[in-house]
Image (cartoon, rainbow, N blue to C red; front, top):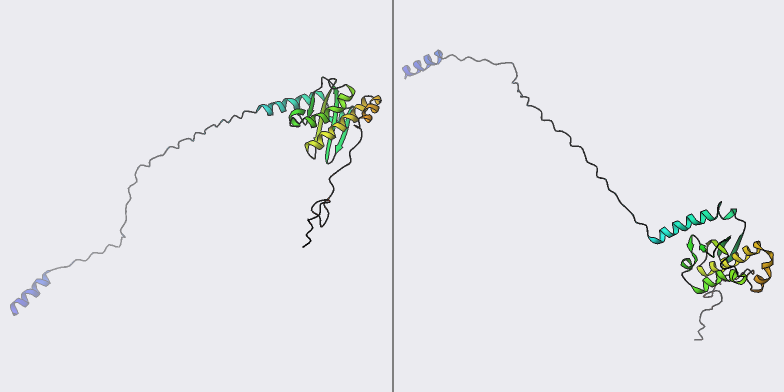
Length: 206
């Protein structure tokens, strides 16, 4: 037992431990790789072409606007043979020019503007037919307000007043047909307690 302990102690003393601590921190090394260059692809802009085809009605309206401007230099206010007519809430400014009987209302043909209604077309032609000028003058009209019926009657009064500026001799035949009288009738206002201007609610006895 003593031999084994002494031999163990001798073997331990013969061993030498060398401890070496490096004070340098561990360094990580990165290897640079070749940078890959991404070339920017240019954006290709697409050109969108949209074509709109004008309808025949729009083309006709554009042509009539050019025609009216060529026939009325300076506009409606610069003309000499002009008349203003009113009916209900409609107002019409009428210009007469020597021509072949064209009838243009708000840059549209009269028959198209008045929807081909024979009564309204008769209203606007009565003053010219009365004096026999239906094919002697071109009529240019600006009208607004009210409905087509009121505008047609306002145009009739405007034409009659414009014809007075052509000659004062036209007054007698126009007056005889009642074409120079301003119709002042308008819609009567609604009354309180009534259904309309004069219509009363139904009476119930029981």
